[in-house]
Image 1 (tube, rainbow, N blue to C red):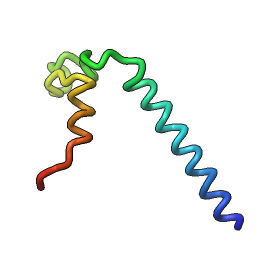
Image 2 (image 1 turned 180 degrees about the vertical axis):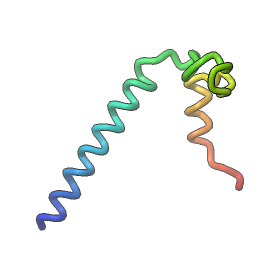
Image 3 (image 1 turned 90 degrees about the vertical axis):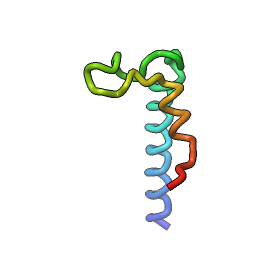
Image 4 (image 1 turned 135 degrees about the horizontal axis):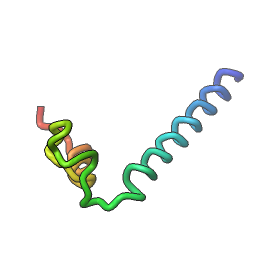
Length: 62
């Protein structure tokens, strides 16, 4: 039973961290702003927050 409680605590921490990342990366941002830079610094193509997450939810064809 001790392992089960520990695993549930780890799950709670993981969900908490995922929520914090979502809040900072998506909720507080303008969805049409660039995700990281203007596209010249890291070759990201100036992808917006909306574009980044709409690709993440699209199933791949491969």
